Image (cartoon, rainbow, N blue to C red; front, side):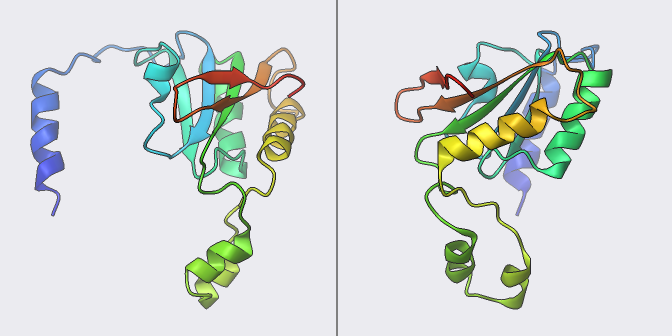
Amino acid sequence: MFEDILEANSRYVAGFSLRGLEPSAAKGLGVVTCIDSRIEPLAMLGLVPGDAKILRNAGARVTDDVLRSLVLATNLLGVDRICIVAHTQCRMAGTSDEEIREALGNTPDAAAMEFLAINNQLETLSADVDLVRNCSLIPADTAVAGFVYDVGSGLLAPQPGI
């Protein structure tokens, strides 16, 4: 079932070029973005492997685990600026946890899970940026900003005031 990825990995190993890459973020950048396949974090930001710490989850949400990773990245791995990148046409936006539970058949397991659906994308982005800015374990001089990536054009738009 996984033969295709193992074959691809064999080709990758043959040309592997990341040996010796430092663990710190060379560009001092941390990126939180969505798992959407239309987002290529390195390419959209003009980066190469080693430049940034990239965290991805459904909806580009600042969860406890994302915050934990950002604390470590800012204190131990050279990150001094963080961008949180939402995107257009996000499946998590404009819905609710209840609608997601219904789509999953309203099972007990689905009822017990928080999906962190996004009712208002810009309000949620602003709240998530504030979570990072207000985290006492992230250095106060860390720059944090919110952006929206347009999956139709590739444009990354800063969100003023966020």
